[in-house]
Image (cartoon, rainbow, N blue to C red; front, side, top):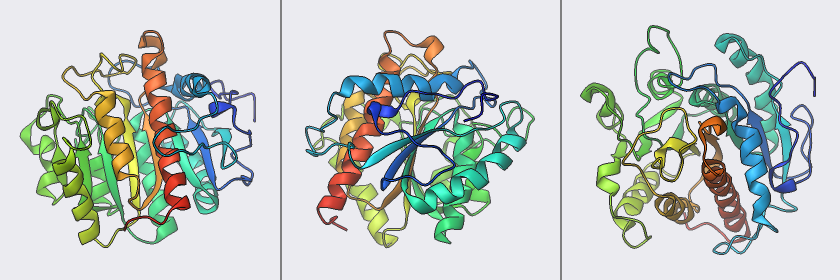
Length: 317
């Protein structure tokens, strides 16, 4: 890739085969980084997230998941970081769309962010590919439903509002998990008032195992079934985790989810009709002992292994 893009990562996720974002992948699953943090409202640094997640993933050894009994090895490749401008949101998104459209058409993608503003253009590309709005499962401390970005029209805290307004997502198929930040009721409840589901962090307190989380899991599964299992996208903001588990993020919020909770939900919902995912807002400059990067790497790994296991065994849809 061009040396003019200063924040491109050169270490592959789990040391998987490396490719180029502009070339076809030889595997049905692929990873790519979007090293952009030009829309953060607090601490910058998420542009270094893809690199840190990749490096943390190297401790996964052979990558065989203990629940799904499968590994991304042989099924997934790392296409590196997208070569994008890093000073203009409009220029970044304009350059991003022609790159990601063929990638989405060729393989099942896991995207490494980057701040959360990258999800809006991703959803635009997914809707164009599938020709219909997507359902979304959104892990986050923040609702991201603000109508403006501190006076600017778009940012990492507006993408949910924009996606709903643009018709990129199914309102009834939008699920938020872990929300807890300060915010006006109109923003906090926006997804619910549009017909979606919200499981805030307070609701989830003390619920970690699949059995304990079964009421939440059942509601999500029933909602997707009622919508006839539309294409489903996962957007996982690492700040959904409590800062005790993920201190390395730009806008940490105490009182968050545990890694056990997130893994339980990812594992149990794996049979749903997922078509892609992103993991965003990992900011290594504020991390301690790489805790955040390790958590993010294992979230991406768990997602990929769940999708591989589903492909091996017919999904229970």
